[in-house]
Image 1 (cartoon, rainbow over the protein chains, first blue to last red):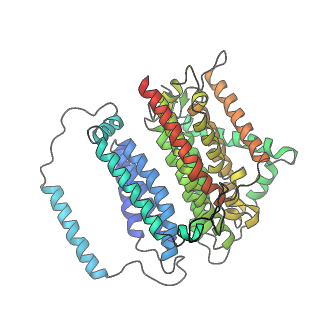
Image 2: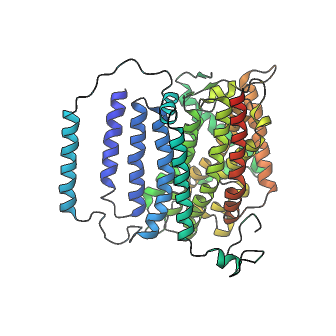
Length: 186
Length: 295
């Protein structure tokens, strides 16, 4: 059963991954990529990593939905109404892909994989959380804050309207001058 | 811990859900009835906008009810769920996320401006409700000290989570409405855009989309019971009866709210969600975490 699921999901993941480059519509390409990633999530569940698999499904769905918006905003021909191709520099890319594939396969075949020691833990999720977070809690927290600060500062830098536009040159306006009012009544 | 139901239940659950949704929709529609309209949609003539992306529309409309039924797999009736997964709460959230993709696809596919506006509105609204919503269900998981829905129900044997996590409960209820783009959050299918994401749908596709929306609404309302209202716990009556009574109460309350509240504009809701709801949800999670640590 799980062997069948493994192969079906694997073939589906590769097929929809290839289709990303066959479609000429951004929406189709995005959701083909999402299908591929969902199959990878399913693959993780089949391998017994339930939590990682389900989180992959959750994160990838939301991420690809938002990504669709950006792809359509910035790419030419988003609806595929005009002829275009998703592949560029086919010869160079093909050569690079072949080399990477050969390297990976050689690695898979040559690495001395360790045999399994002991049995699977009763709750892999808890063990994963402990090994990720246990001794490295400080690192994770610092990293999280640094990432969050990066997001906030890049948004602040990217926004066209700054505080001088909103509160006037001396920053004395009691109400910000916004084109669209928000819901908090500011 | 909730028991897994026998395998044949997998076949019964979608049918049972359909009957439940039909009943709730009929009560909501009143004497005008919803059944006749549903039957009319089944035989309606198909029409398609020129240059619409038909496969994407079919995928979007079909995905909505499928996501709702898959989410229902971890919702226990009494103390039995189709599958009481070790990560059931994350599973529920992941299946809800599929609805995001479904609504956007339905908005994009028909090559129509109004439906596209509806799809984009849902993404904006979804981004705003998803974070407080995730924090609210994480808070319930924190209280139960498990991602397993059965363990969360078990932890509410004495006191319901709704009593000592009122903020998380309130945020969950509001996001249950937002998830199904109902009632104050119905801008994605608003009348100002002639029906938004659903404007070009007809026939079976319209039935699947609107029916899937009902399913999503009923399932997310029902999930409030194991998360915050003690699941099947209660005196005298058996577990399944308590689940039924509590689910009916949540549904009745949400339908009442939908009738009482005017539509909230997406851009206003976005600011409220980021500036008010998210910090409130974080504070609620902090309180619960401190209580759990002190136990």
